[in-house]
Image (tube, rainbow, N blue to C red; front, side):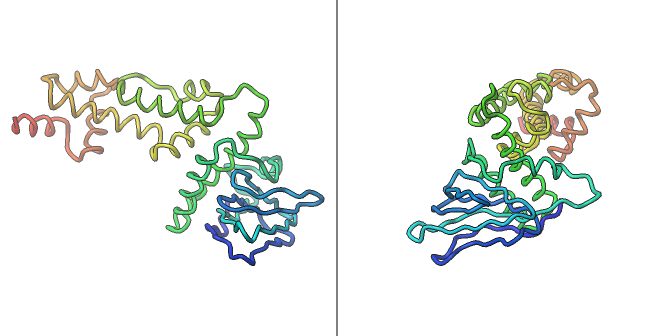
Length: 262
């Protein structure tokens, strides 16, 4: 996927848009104001919550209410011929040119992170956030009229899961099974979890286990092998390796340091 340019724009009163024949794809999400977009023979209202994926090769015209000027996130991007992409041209073309977000606050959080990564020139992160935003739009479309959970409920599920992981890091969590509970694919659930927590599911689980490990090392007389077993590690060496990576010191050194302090 090729990122061409992106930004967050607050429109001047005389703003208008004529894309001509678009040479690429344009994700365009208004966050303030009102306006109108003309696409073929259809006029679409531009308001926060209405999200636009303007298609390559099409022409779009837009104006704004001068008394309520627009602000929007936007990103021009394209697919690179002959290279694998997380989103295919067929999938992009199947998405409607506009859709109403079912969880606009969450979508704008994704876009804020996407634009921040773009300004930092972290292309890999930009692509990850862009794909997450596109999958949100796809999820809106695919879940209409089905029994899929609303995205607000997905957020509540993730928050409940975070609490459960912190309280019971020793449990064996299966990402596929968790995703199925809320009618999502494994990959999409992973992206939503990272977008909401700032960490991948694996990193969040490991961090929670390491916090629990530090508690046991400080307050119990368990051997390190027993602590590793309690926290669902079959290999004490893997546990020790992750602990040192997370804290900068070995479990035995951490235990000794806290023993000396007491």
